Image 1 (cartoon, rainbow, N blue to C red):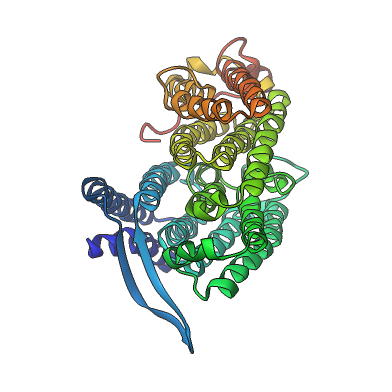
Image 2: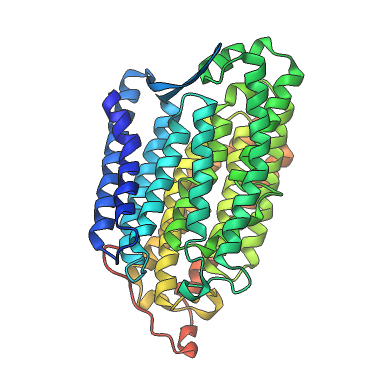
Length: 463
């Protein structure tokens, strides 16, 4: 089993290094194919580990090496595969494999095709470091790695001349990348303070050792540490007021948007709160603030999605709203429900973004849904995929989004937080409205794109 841990973790790193070897070469399709195969190997290893953990109920621990050893301070470079981390591993590697395969077709004509796959695989590797580490130091390494890779990918089309798919003329890819990087660095300062408080008072950064010592710490120390960690989570998961970078991140290629919004960067903040749940469970005031902020963000972002005309930004605001649901659940102590919604959201959100990429390609980079309409006739399969994903996002019964979102709303009611419950119910209705609004205006009705002289067509079959 230890070998499977290393295979799952390092296959994306091998993929990144392999792609980097051809980074300055002309587009070579086999680079994308090899990268996708290596990501699938990582996914397969993750599934095997998940089966083992589910069957035995025992977490797997492995220490690769002693990283820092100074005096009484010892921080190993170790990994843990338990129910939380293995769930994230399966979600991250599966969605990443799908995105890699999709990117082969989407980036087909991009001159930096090979470099793109190097960055994309490095992004996945950083996320796996984050979720698999057994201590806060390793988590922070993965945390910063995700930040750097997001900067590289959001700003991938850093030159206006080299950017074939401009989304918003007022925001350049370089600006969007820097905005995301700077906002996350601000939040990371709070996270560093939280980690320092934990280390200063416990003498260790290992999860098990830290959580075992929490009952011995004063309430003020616990509160300060929880606030620090949550500030870090606010930046990564784009919670108000550190949310503006998320929609501007749409300036990156669509596969990047799918990966950031579905399985990697924005889910890191939710994962941190779930992983540190013993700490947040002992700080009820901080937890209630998390639930309140998450509920506010849910309805705030949903209201923005209701009036937006940009296809990718509507989906981006829906991500922000669903992250609010996840934080509401985590703040109310329903950590497994938050993880359930995270996993369910990853799949239907990736499908929505990849479908939006198909529409963007067919419409020659036009994203205004009021200039579309009637695309169902020429993009039947994309319409079906996006419609099914919208059903899940809207929480229609028997789809994954229904079960996870309904569980969050039920938790808010059972905990007696009736104001949060009402807001979450209203937001669920708003979510259904904007989900179907974007599908109907894009695929049904009058063929408004003909006025622009556009002749849309479906993407490659495998895409």
